Length: 273
Image (cartoon, rainbow, N blue to C red):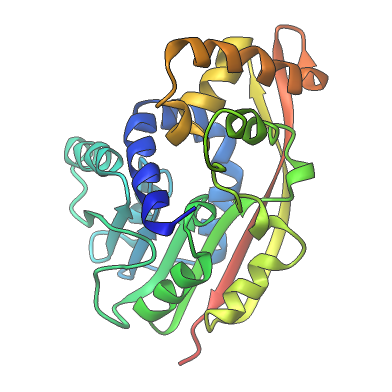
């Protein structure tokens, strides 16, 4: 898919998915996000740029860690995600946060201006993930750290067939390289290609628990990785894809709900100079 088109689709899709995202995914993504924050070792007074921040599931805990003298700049390609973050920051009276709509591959900030950079479950959507990592490297000060999390291997993620279900109904593949960074040491290699040293990564098994068929479908389609395509479907197609997806995850059925296997890869990189 041509990169500019992919970006437009992502922006539209995540604007639509924003209302569902946190409620449906907060607990599922929490283990990977907590591991990222642990690896980042944020200190009081530091500056962090949180890329593809979504509704701020990493941004807000990070803001607490760096304190009032620090700064979190939260960025996302979706204007609606940024609006939600800004509203929440005002309500909770955070004074150490800023929010900007930005493309991960073109961060509109000066070189060497942040102590740390994070990107939680967003790098898979970038048309060129290495370019996005190079941008993270550029904006870090010497001695800065970058942390990311991506989904793991396709065959370790029980919900992966959702991409085939959607792709059969659209002209182009949805996130064709979604699982690529989860393969073998691809994330480590991408960090190193971007210039990072002392790269470390960890694989983490996870379970996505849903109480019902409806919960599983809403999370997967309306608030999940195929939302950009799904939200453009007419209602009859939306109804058609739900039973196909439920059939693909039937082996994970538990009582009325599901416990679907998943995998994260969390990585750390250091900017030496």
